[in-house]
Length: 205
Image (cartoon, rainbow, N blue to C red):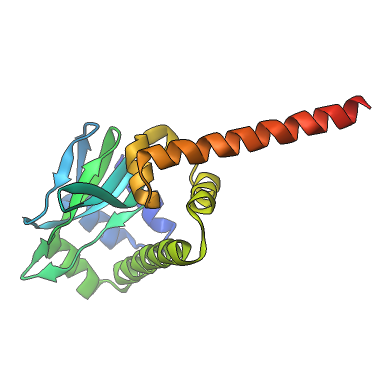
C-alpha cells in the first residue's frame, strides 16, 4: 500500500529517498467502510489526507438539507485551512461513499515536510492547483451549462462516479433534485433510443 502511495505522489512531483523514508515513518494507512464519516463540521483535524483507494464526498448541511459540494477520488489530497497546527473544518463534512483507503499524515509532520522539502512543497502546490481548477470548472458549469449539460459533462468525465455514488448525492452535486435527475436521465435515454432507431431504419434501406 505504501508503495502505491509513493507512486501516486510521483505523478505530482519528485521525491528523494530521505523524503520517502520520512513518509514511511510518519504516514498512517487506514481503511474506512462505506458511508463512514471521516471528518464532521465544527471539528478540527490534526491530519491531512490522501485518497489511496475509494471516494470521499464533501458535503454541507444547508437549512437542514444535505448538499454535496465535491468528490475526492483516488490520487486526491484533502487539504483544509491550517489554524494553530490544526485543520479547522468549519461546516465541512467528509464521508466515504464506498470502502476507502486513506493515507493520514499528522499536520505537524506535513508542515515539516513542506518547510524542509521543496519536492513535497511542490507536490502540495500542484495538488491544490488541481483542486482549485476543478472547483473553477464546477462553478463555470453552473453559470454556462444547463442541468442536462452538467449531467452529460460529469458522466463523460467521471463515469465510475455513477457506479459509486447514490443518485441523491449526484443530483445534489449537479444542483438539482433527485426527481429532476431522473427526468434528465429519461430524456437522454429516450433521445438516444430514438437516434438509434432512426439510424437502424436508414441502414435497413
